[in-house]
Structures are given as C-alpha cells and as structure tokens.
Image (cartoon, rainbow, N blue to C red; front, side, top):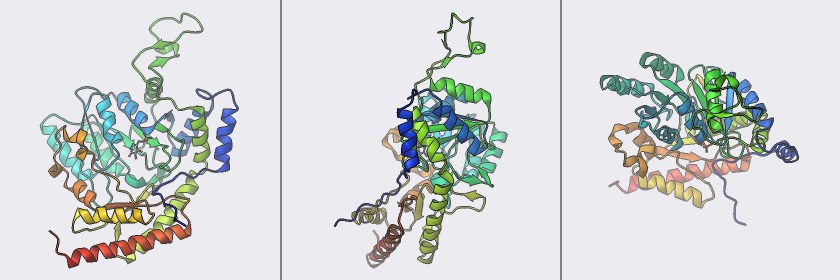
Length: 400
Ligand SMILES: *Cc1c(COP(=O)(O)O)cnc(C)c1O
C-alpha cells in the first residue's frame, strides 16, 4: 500500500464545526445575518481588542486596512520580503508604492535594526513610509515594541499581518490586542491556525477605523444617517459615500470560524507540543530551526528549519526527495522581490542580504494538530537521514 502524503499543514474539522455550518444552511441567513457579528465579537474579545471586521479573505482585509489608514497614490508602504505576496500587493491595490525591510535571520521576522536604518535614509530623501506591515512569520510576533517606538518617532502607522499568528502571544498578551499597531489582520485559509474555508479579519481599537473598514467591505455604503449628505428619502434609503468592494464573509464561513475559534487554544497547544518535540530532536542533530524568542508564544503555523547547504541545488534536492517519500516539505517564502512582477519594479537582491540567505536555508516541514505520533516520527527520521546524506555528499564532492 502506498503511504499517504503528510501535508505541511491541514485543517482540523470537528463534528461541532460541521453542525455549525449545517445549522446555518437550515437558517434564514446565508449572508448578512447574525453569525458574522458573533464571530467578530468573539474574535475581538479573544484578542482583547475593541473591534473586528470580518472579510472574505486576509488579502481583502489587508487591502481595506491600507485604505482605512489613508494609503493612496504618492504613499509608500513597507513590509517584509519573507512573506506571502499579499502582504505587499495590498499597497499596490491602493496605488501606493511598496518597499521591503530586510529580516532578522534568527527569527525570519522584519528586523527593527534594518527598519531603523532604512527610516534614517528615507528621512533624508523625504520618502518615509505611511504604513509599515510587519509579518509574524510562522506564528511568532515581530519585535512590536521596537517597531512601535519607531512608528512614534517617524510617524508611520502599523498593520500587523498576523495571518499566521491568531492564538499567539507577545509579552503575555494575545497577538491582535493592537497595543502596538493600528490594525491586525488574520487569515482563516484552511492551511492557517483556524479556518472559515476562505476568510479574514481586521481587528482594531478605533471605532472610526472599524466603521471605515465595514463601509469599505460593503461597497462604501452607509445606513447611518449621521454619515449621509442629506435626509433619508424613506425606509429603503442608503448612501454610497465612497468607493468600496464586496469583501463580505458569508454566514456559513462565520459559523465555521466561530466554531473553530472555540478550539483555537487547543490547536495552538498541540502545535507547540509537536514543535517542542521537533526542537529537541533537531537540536540533537545540530539542525537549526527558526528561533522563538522569550517574549513570544508562537502559534506555530509553520515549522521552519534553517539548514546550511553548500549550494541551493541540494536544498531543492532535499525538498524534492522529502516529497518523493510522502512528506510535503515546502519553502516559505520566496522573497517577494524575486517574483517577476516585483523584479520589473526594480528591486535588487543585494539590498536584502538576510532575506536571500534565509531563502537558501529554509525548509518547512509538516506541522498541524492532526499529525499522528507515527507521522511525527516519520518526519523526524526522514528529514534527519536525508540531510545527513545530502550534507555528506556535498562534502565528498567539492562545491562548484
Ligand atoms: C495566507 C496569507 C495571506 C493571505 O491570506 P488569504 O486569507 O488567503 O487572503 C496574507 N499574508 C500572509 C503572511 C499569509 O500567510
């Protein structure tokens, strides 16, 4: 019998989740009913934030988060190059320019030192960013205190791309509390910590921002008389007061998300237990993984090894052979500026040496709550033996 593939990430769906979705199907509301606000309140409450706006994806949430902070033509947004393309695309949707801040090699997160240096340079050329989007890679918060201090000094706003990090903590407070940012965005794609199939959420502590997010999510339309330019024409009346989108989450998605939220702490606990096992094992093999610092409790969306290869062909070989053996290893992420679309905007590799180095080392191995003990030990032994083979083969053949 052929072994089934062990995916790098996977949703865990319970009977409660299924019942929650089926109940919505039997109800009066498939969209714009009570489940979306219930999911929003529960998420805001979980994070210790005041407001939350559910969307049909984190990509949409990032887009309207930029708009809600006033990003437009002539503005610049900075993010991490080691992220999914959506972290950068959101700025371009608004007609703004995008640039990247190099990472810290140990954590893979935006480096506050690199950020400060880039801000000093930008100040001289009058090209400071309007918004900075730190990305909590693999579920570990960035050094938000340092970034927030720079935000005060250089007067930029912060959107945390916490697509990986719902359920994580920073200085013992939930990621999403927005103590260090204007808006925090979560993703509920099935590969993330909790899922609503597709879906996202933008949390904040500002009623003004939340109103704006909710308007932009639904065509720029308001039902609030205070926001209207003239008296109501009657009970049917609404006004479109700006250009928005249809970025709404459905009731089915919200019911699933709400049910998943009840299991969040348990999911993150199990992810941490498996990650701890990996840490112990790979440390014994002198194989490095991303460092998780003391002030962080990671949600462990991903488990990323950082391995030294004498050339990048061996890294590719390792991922290829892991896949051939039924382990869906991956590489998170290709530096965004290497994408052809971004290359044509003129980014040079030499500007981001740590992102390039990271890209030559990183390998994501499977981590999700449904991994069995058997699968965990298969992952450990296969990764170990392949790495031993590939690193010794590179020693016997001198690298070109
Ligand atoms: C998944 C992801 C997104 C996009 O999330 P969607 O919900 O799929 O739109 C954005 N940023 C990061 C870092 C992600 O991992």
